[in-house]
Image (cartoon, rainbow, N blue to C red; front, side):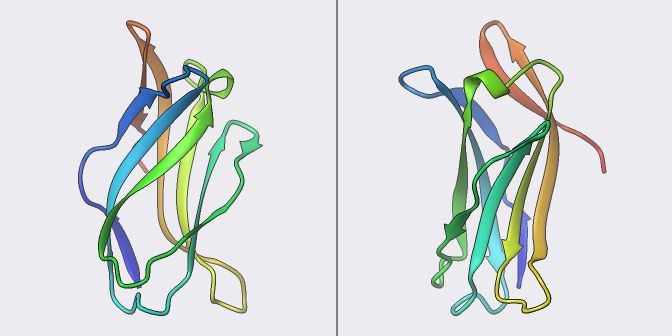
Length: 115
């Protein structure tokens, strides 16, 4: 199974202003009918909780990460990951991206960091 980004990520404040929503369009390829994956984020030293991504035959979708606004600080590093969870040796990383966070005119923004 393979996961790749399928467009440009977006950042916006939630309706109550307490969270930043980071959305990433993705595409999954390969044997995904029975696959189980988890998604997670890390901002600085804070590791967000893991959530299950129910693939169930869906080949395209959008990952949404709900990050507390107080963690979305200028020049902080954000890591987004999709992990394959069925491997008995431990989760296999299927997709990962790193970003540097910014605020531009009061709006959140995530700039990709070169690998």
